[in-house]
Length: 517
Picture 1: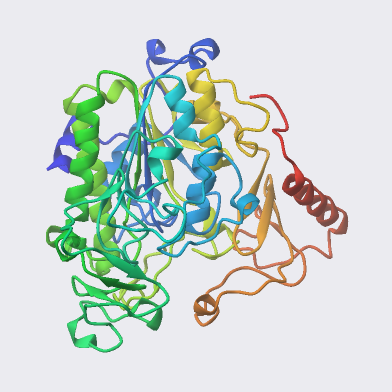
Picture 2: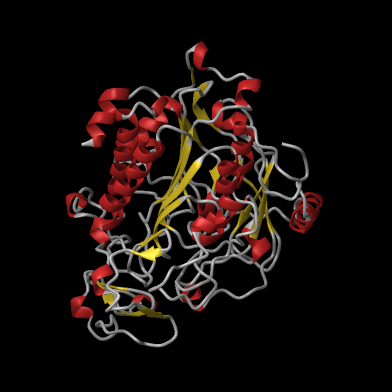
């Protein structure tokens, strides 16, 4: 297995800060001209405390831990938002999702990234990279009213990816079929796919009517068409030959990623690998079922680690590890009960998915966006633990700096160059950072301001006891003294509260980059 091979090749060393060999150190000049391969592993709903490298004991993640032991492990890295679509939008565009009203998308949403706008993969294409996305997409496809039986576009290929193999939306939404480049895989033209999120057009049993057919019971939102024993959001007719089997995701996705690596290893490539794990429905492959005592959620973490190890193993066997920058992180914080009864709550035990932080997915508290992040590159100057303040929105400007690409003033306007922090565990990151959820937070060092929220929460969220961290009054926390954000200091520090509120508004209004790379 990849796990054994990876550990035997690298060994398990202490993650304390260490210098690499002098020949591998980066000078400032060299850092501007490097063109290593780039792989971004993007887990889904994985919390700060969900990896053994971050202190988890109920689950072990040896492949990801090996990256940590030989790379940099970050303690203050953040997804741009506390939900999936906004984080992915910001990572690929270098802009906050609120600038485009990007929220969690339905399964039939049009593509929310304008094909005319600059993107991270487009930028890398311009300097000679071949680019691919393999995994969960959830950024919309087409222009609305998609005909899944024809070429589906615009999509990833129109915004900078040379190759794509997708779960079109999410694992819990129809259509439950893979999309490769522009076309559904394995579709029988005599059995066309039809999808609806408004009307029951299903020719399959429904979760609301046949709960006895389900592998996991589901809430009303997730009780549409049953495919592979799982009821989904929405209704689907036809496309029987194209149906996926959830248990096959780890094999299918890693096979596609490795094939892309094989076909493009002679020149620089970039692979964006957004996992379906550990998003619901959690239906691990049979080989991982029972791998932990936490049920499917814990088993899905083990599966995700195996997938990571299998791709790293492929890099190692092809002699690509020394020239590949690997970034591993998550699109937002953790969630346990998110629509399916898979015992995630009942079997959590002493495990703390968000680590020491409050909140999780959907929350503006730290647990909503503070996520595990690890980088590995043979040329890193110092490895170990980093407390640099980082957002995934910064990947765009940082990678542009690495490959020597000058950004326009109106390109990736919210992305900052934190390349030094990706290469040196002792380097600084951001001085301030936005955390986007239903409300918006602003970090300045360890001070955190959360703007008042006056909007409406969606019914499906409000009906659950989800702690969003919002309030009708301004909130101010000192994370040095109050890591769980329980003591509002806004009244005690009115000037700081006013200053941070004004700064947040200024950031929201800007239309150009504030400084050069």
